[in-house]
Image (tube, protein in one colour):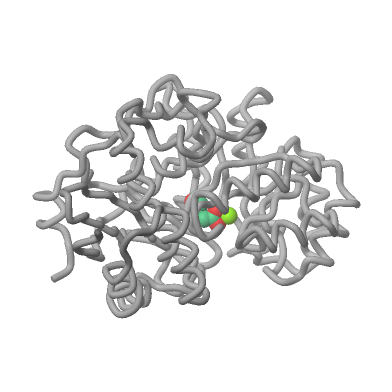
Length: 369
Ligand code: MUC
Ligand code: MG
């Protein structure tokens, strides 16, 4: 039934250095999965991560090796199973590997949606919206450049809320940088910060107090991934939204965070969740626990970003919008028609499957051989 499973590493320079506490990106390595069926359907998925092993515990190279060595032979050996049974079989036979599992699942549901002639969102319960708000991340490392970049984005009607990457300087220097940007952009523009787990609990208490006083709207992943107790105390202590990002890695972690009141917002990422249906499960846990949602990214290119958009379009509550700007950070596109960003939102395609047309010639030129 599945004829081939290819994993392509496609390296594309970013439009400017993207500075985070965990890594500075000058290029992004897209990890693309192409699944071809015996009867001629092609499904795409993406398993991109950030900064090699700088961000997570899977690298582009490890994802490719594991797909080529384990996932592809298993998938090609299966027949007579539906998509759900295929995914269940993969989960039974392969531990961990959330990014690879997400990419394979995306490709399989893409194929199934094409067979049915429906947008992928309709196989996940159905979309509630046709476009979703997308913020921009200011991460040039320079306050004046960040302000100019934000003003440009607002004027072009591309983005009207922003996330700032902090955590690589002292708390005082970071707070000064953030509040200068907030002051320049004004009260109506929502500003959030992502600490990428760089602060101790004491630094977090100091930093969050100052940022809350300065009118910042949300603090993302202030402390270490496993320090759920600190996340819980910070969520209790402050009125400002505390968002779990790296601490949220699949439905079980969502359950534990919810049970311990260790976040007021979840940054849902399809790859970190281990799949599209798992991301939907996290949204359901959040709903039951009264936790707000934000659509996160691993800075994927257009394939992972639009798969995420299909998922997020089904969420009842998307109170904090999304950050699906990954394709806009890259100097090259890999689609025949670029994703549509207009009026501060990303438009979710209405065509069958993911609803995009991948340009394989462009990929061939850019991929690592
Ligand atoms: C993260 O931690 O949120 C998402 C946007 C961005 O700039 O970095 C990523 C990862
Ligand atoms: Mg984050």
